[in-house]
Structures are given as C-alpha cells and as structure tokens.
Length: 436
Image (tube, rainbow, N blue to C red):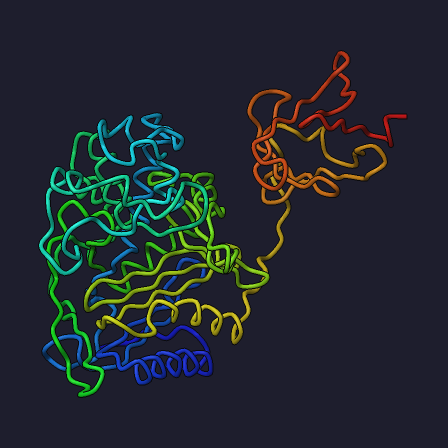
C-alpha cells in the first residue's frame, strides 16, 4: 500500500505519530486518515492491520462506514430544494409530510437539531437492526416522546434526518439514494462512496473491554433511517467532499448556501460555540478559527471530517471500531498541519475592474464614525463601525452578506447622477461626518 506524503518530513512524522497514538490508546483495529490543503490530498496514513482479511495496512481507497457524515449530504439535498424554490427552511414539516408527529416543527429545526425531537426512533435500536419502511418508522412516532420544547437547546436527533430524507424524495419524485448519487456523488466524482460496501472494505468490530478480542459488529440496511447514517466511503472520496466545503461546486450548492449552513444555529448551552451546530454541520471553535464538518458513528465504525474554510485545510479520519478516538482525531490533524506548516497567505494581485459599485469606494461616515468601502477578492467590503461584504442586487441596491448587516439592503440615494448618501438598516452613511 502506498501512502501519500506531500508535506515536510517533520509534519508527516507528527501526523503519523498522532494516528499511531490514537490507534494504540483507543485499541482500534485500524485507523485511516488523510489531510488536505488547497483542494489537494497532501498526506495519508494508516495504522493497524485489522481492517480487511488480508492483514495489510488499509489504503486510502478502502471503504469504511461513515455514519452521520451522511447527514451532511441529506442537508445539502434539503438546501438544493430550498434554492430551487421547492421549500422554505421555515416550512412546517407537516406541510411536506402531512399527518406526521412533530409536524409543527420546521425543516430548519430538523437540520439544526433544535426542535426538541427525541434522538432515536421508537422500537429496537435502529443502528443494530434491519431498517424499516418510512410508514413503519412514522407509525411509531409520538410527539409525547419529545426531549423538550423547540428552540430551547441543541438536542441531536437521528430521527429528524430520516424525515428530511423523505421530504427531499417526495419533492423530487425519486429516492433519497438516487438524489444523493446524482446531485452530490456524481458531480464531486466520489466514485467509491456507496449505500452498501464495495471491496476493498473494512470489517466493523468492537473490542472486548477485558479480553482485547475483536467482536464483529452488524451492518444492516438502515431503511428509512438511511439518510441519517447509511453510507460507506474512503479517505480519497471524503477528501474530495471536504474540498467541496472549502471551494463549493456551484452544480452542487452555491457558496452563499454553504456559508449559510456553516453559520451557528443551535448549541449546547454548556459548550457554546465549542460544540455548536449549523444547518447539517458541526462547528468547532478553534480560536481564532472555525472548523466545520461532522463526526460519524455506526456499529463497528467511526469517522470524522472537518475543514477550516479560511485556511483552506482539512482532515478526514476513518476507523473500524465502535468506540475510540477517531472523530476527534480529524480536528487534531488539522491543528498539527497548521502548526508545522502554517498556511501561506495567497499572493496579492491587482483587483479586476468592478462591474458595479466603483463609485462607492472610499471613506464614508456613520455620524462621526469613519467607515470604508473597498474591494477584496472582487467583492465590495464595508468596514469600520459597520462591517459586511456587499453583493449587488440591482442598480444602486446591495445586500449585506455577513456580520450585523447580513441580509440587510444598502440603498444608494442620488440627486440626479450624484450620490448624496447611502442607507442601510436605518443607518445613513455620508461622505463627511454627519453630511456636513
């Protein structure tokens, strides 16, 4: 098996030492990992020879079950429906699944695990038993099993993602699996990601706590719960998927929608941003940076995928054990890469001419507070007491993209051809303090 190393030797040694420590201390039959930078897989490594029957170190093309990383793809399918006008994130679930329990919750609630829905379906533990049909799943649902009221706190719900998968299937008229294949896996060229394992694939194990022996774990078809955790994938494929979250492919999802998914919506009040959730994405505060991605767990398998969109780096980790340090290993590998090889600031090049907004450049004032409108990477940027990036919507009309003014409209007010002032969210911006 060939391992990829396109990092410095000391970086590679530190990365390997980290996965070796995780494998040894957590008693993992195998752990497989990859690190990416600027869209390229720059390092892969594996430790442990109990992934497949041949006893070899697993390569970057060996499949493992990825568990709840599957949820991020279900969330992408929902956002595609939203962007195509098929639903609103504020739609009640019952609008699309009439008569269902928890029908008063919104799609946003389900995406962010903020609706108070119970974590698991009623009945036998779904991860360790053959899956049921959607009708069987919903027949057992009961609002009285809610873990709490909506919008009180983040409460993770596998069940909610079973419902989201059914919503996209009904809206598009094809199965969740077909949508995942056609609208995510194919465009991203993830050819080794599948519903069932395809050789070479790791075997799932748990490790007996006293004997240290391996016990095989089941791998059933999850049925209606598949959108919550069914898929299998590889280091190479997940690296492509991680790259998508850094450089979105418009055919799959726009950059603006990815940014929306990566904004915090719900959190555990005990953890705050250190353990918050966006729309289908886990968020980890890594001061002063933010990691986005997801963890995964199914019987016999663990997974992690996290990226830093600003520093354009990420890591993916896979293991074939029910318990151990695999998911949290991905953020640790990102930290090692950036500590040993800090990202180099991209070379500055002159900005191209603006199609709209050049006359807004320069100094402005909000009362006596100085502001500036400049250009960064082809986008107008308001900075100072009010800070946001500005997207043109129409002549003399812009919209804030982030910060306090996210979503707010900035209007250019003219007297004839001359600009007299700007207005945004009741703030008046003038070229001189108070326009005097």
